[in-house]
Length: 467
View 1: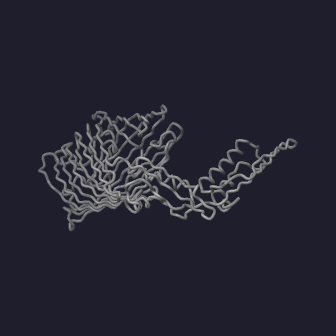
View 2: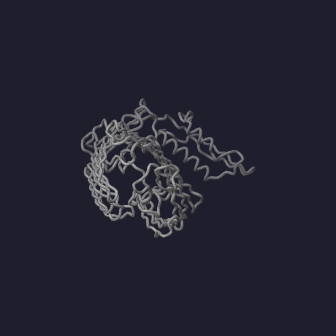
View 3: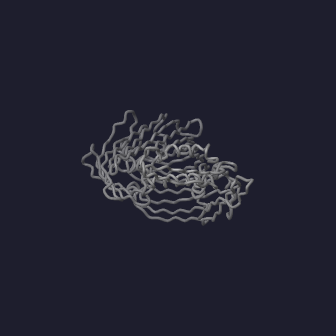
């Protein structure tokens, strides 16, 4: 059988073979098993693999079939030298993309992963990866890999108009420089104007040791909000170290921020904070076969920790933690259940000195539908929501596949913020419709607050993946 005799993948395939003594012979199973052997050999670098013998002996006297298959895998080849062609980036950067090295056993999976990683970089408009089998020699078991790259447009411009029930009408302008130098550094900028919030940011990104998964990011941001008599202007600079590990991500961040804010007729105050933080996220999901943006089963868990000390450039000392989770389970071909929860709490010396962007709020499209954006929480003497030290929100939703690209949903959300624990929860109920578009679900929901029946039903519009 050749080198495949000691390959665990072939052992597992043989253990699952359908051609067993006593089973009814099926020519379809016979051809399928041969195809599986050929495909596995090609996938795992057995370039010379072939069937030496392949026949079925039929004996009519006892209605039996004897299957004779002799498969010679030959040598399992290894990855050889990797060469990159036709691009402006430093080859040292490109050589950090492959997660295999010269001398590792060949697999097509590794080549596909390399193509996906290069495509995700936004540096290239096309990528062709070819094993150079014709360059093999009798005394060389390593196949060279050639990667031909066509550079992308260096500059990317973005302009868009939209509407969100949390933001109102909005306009977006963006400019990205996909690479600034041969080291692959990137510049991204965005200006978003809306009825309730205006944001401008510039981000400078540096590829990490594994550029497909690691990055250093430096961002300057200005954010202005004016809604529900909450008036804030936030100036922030952050430095982040981002690492991806299979299904989970870790972010270390150090941020400096100044925020000018007022609630209602209160005089405007300013706060300055130097805030270190850490975030850990884990995502596991299974996409629908017809559309990879649609999730059939999966869950997401994220934990965010941050704090500051009044002895190191902060108006007041605080530590806070927030946990977000979402779970989607397919019940059958039509029904799914979607569960969502958020819990957060903090310890702060002087809450009044804490910037609004560091407080907890609830309400809105992704929090408690039926209430406006950040409409839930403690209020001041004027009845204006000022946020809280604790937050708890949740959602239970069932949706039904009504047509191939349409779902209908019923849901109940609940949540609130508070200065003390436990949090007194507000509850809403609602219905919705989802269009399963090629870019992901587009959701239209209407919801009403059970605890405040005099409040009108509220419309919510969201776009994006379920997780």
